[in-house]
Amino acid sequence: MSQSMTINLKIWRQASGAADGGFVAYTVENVLPEMSFLEMLDLLNEQLALKGEAAVEFDSDCREGICGTCGLVIKGTAHGPHAATTTCEVRMRHFHDGETITVEPFRAKPFPILKDLVVDRTAFDRIQQKGGFITANVGSAPDGNAVPIPKTDADKAMDAASCIGCGACVAACPNASASLFVSAKISQLSYLPQGQVERGRRALAMVTQMDAEEFGDCSNHGECEAVCPKEVSIENIARMRREFIKGAFGK
Amino acid sequence: MSSFRSLAWSSVGKKVITGLTGFMLIGFVMVHLLGNLTLFIPDGGHGFNEYGHFLEHAIHGWLIYAFEVGLITIFIFHILAAVTVAWTDKRKARPKGYAMVRNAGGKSRKGLPSTSMIVTGITLFVFVVLHVKMFKFADHPAVTYDGTTMKNLYAVVVEAFKQPLITGLYVTVMVMLGFHLRHGFWSAFQSLGLNSDRYMSTLQVLARVFAVLFAAGFVALPLFLYFFADAPVPGGH
Ligand code: FES
View 1 (spheres, protein in one colour):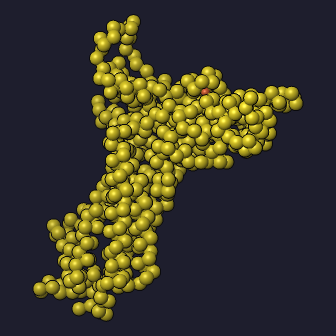
View 2 (view 1 turned 120 degrees about the horizontal axis):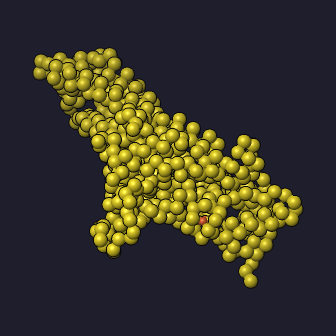
View 3 (view 1 turned 45 degrees about the vertical axis):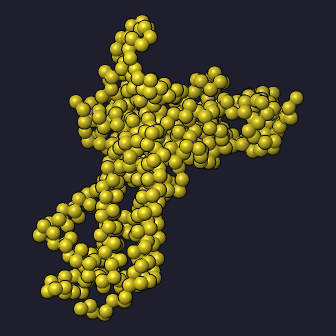
């Protein structure tokens, strides 16, 4: 039986998007080191429910780091202090007994707060709808190697495609830029033959939508790559710019 | 489809403009530093004055005008694009900030050079204006070499750098130039899409080397004049 811990929390609470918010302090007892951060918050919510208080709202779905639904700023870092992890993969053993942890929602104008720690990330969907797709009817699955793709291109496409759209890049960017997300989506398709048809206008359309959503611009700080749970590289951002320049000067 | 102008002033367009003008400014600073190395020649300013005279009169004085107009244009675009990125758009995109921010570390390139770009940049701009006022629009005494009379810019420069306050300010601002280049140099490649994981570490090393070389060169000049140049003859030749 592992040692249970007491954790102090400072959590951002906000009744609705229109309401004013503020930090509320909580203490959670009997936290086990092997619990995930979200399980610790579940424990807090059980205690709140017993007291008849409103639960702290936060997003989660798969709780195994593959869906991109969860996302909190924990102690000043998106998805917490550990690299290459989503919020749901953060374990309480990374914190010590009696520690005070500040928990905030992802903050960006295009990610409006819905309630407490839950933000609306549909801006990402609207960007995707502008160009993160292919129009070719690819039919049923082709034979393996019927369409030759160099191994390095396939790998790069896969690396970009590992983006789960959690929005941590926006949350961590000092400018609240969505460049890493958008560039991952643009890159992924630019490496593959199926993505060539719309290649010229894809970057232009998606960047234009990114700007319309009022995300900030990139200053090449690279905080996005450092917090990305899938370690998507900022080389994709350079590639997005290449695609954009080609698109702008192309036909 | 968007107009070319709106694409040029989009978030990515502004990066391309900042990077492109940044490269041009780096080129200018490089030529400027190389030219100023004539100040190190112990010839009482002959070489430096000849260099200045050449610049002012090349192609009947058109060269310098063309460069000045070009430089001012480049500066304006560089500043406008960068200030909207790092100041206005940034504030709009996150109206309410975090209570706690900690740098993520790891692969992040965020640090003093990257976060102070706007401060070092604005300081450099103010500096350039004062620098031009101080040396270009000064009252230059005349000097004659082999029958050619020209401006004795050297005398003005030495007189300025014999003042500890001016030398101190120059050294400070040139260290800031080093910081600006530390982030700006590799950033320009990244902004123009001329980067990938393969080149990243090389670019980071080059950025450090460039930053140190430029800062050291421009710091050495005023210090050299302060400590080693002969005080100018009052009234010149
Ligand atoms: S809940 Fe699915 S990634 Fe965290």
